[in-house]
Length: 108
Image 1 (tube, rainbow, N blue to C red):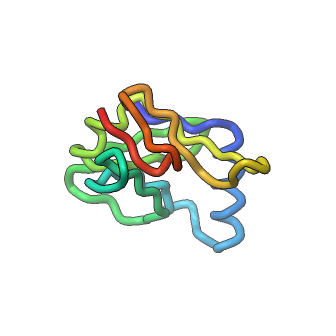
Image 2: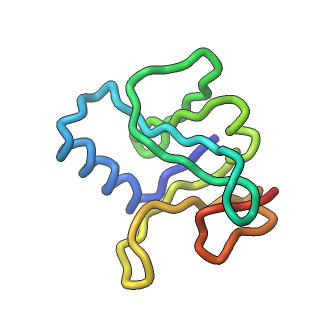
Image 3: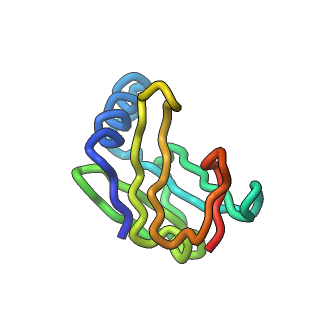
């Protein structure tokens, strides 16, 4: 399962409204090799499902990830911060054994 915090839900809904994206859009989460710790998160809005996609709905937000990425992000929560120390989406991943200082990459 993938989860979304209340703050992330509000921000996602705001972006979808601002960009006039209809109800068929969802949040695509993926993992790719790279970054200081070896793996990097990627998040985007999409409206096309792929064959190996895993679909989850939390708090009314549809989150989609490919099967390979799901192995790394299972039980992860997408969150959002608008504080002074940083603004944007971030991932709370219980599978990560370490993360880099900038928070952009992780290792399992």
